[in-house]
Length: 272
Image: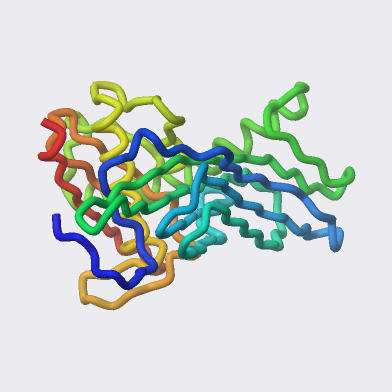
């Protein structure tokens, strides 16, 4: 692997994890600020993290999805710091299943020849129910029969929307699903020391870190179409991660604004 030059770059690059470094805190939180009108509300999205030491580069990248569609993204990077904080207010106009996912990253330079990294993830979710018959209400997990019914309705609507998009990409690219484990990006989530089934902790860290390196370049910054043009990912579906059962590669399936399926391939030869 070629080492980076001395100029800090706004990017995520996977380097071996330094086991001596850890995140003291990493949080993603969703809060309803107010119901601005009878037919809309304002959602506050907060992302923060604290590393246990200053890093050459700190970066947090987050995605916000509503009913399976990307409605917001947050990204901030700073040099020679351990803390990062971001927040954004988003206005929505319908009942929604809101999901937020963040990748927290640090690049650490031990000396001129050794570069390491640290990474972790955080997430939050919120069901927001907006109906003319009663005031707006929210919940994270259903605690009543009514909330369970709303949860089922939102989950089904989201799942139907995503499956329609994903199935088109699967068919266009002639993907044999029997050869893959499938994970929506929002469920491809691992706490420290957690592992992907069949992989070691080191392999899991490398897979997750390399995945987010690719997501940052090819989804966060814009989706590259077949003709080379770059399109904004806002309004696009939650990416589907297809992890090959033979451990050779993974695929990332998403789409452009006009519904054109986009597939990214990442080789996993390094895990054997």
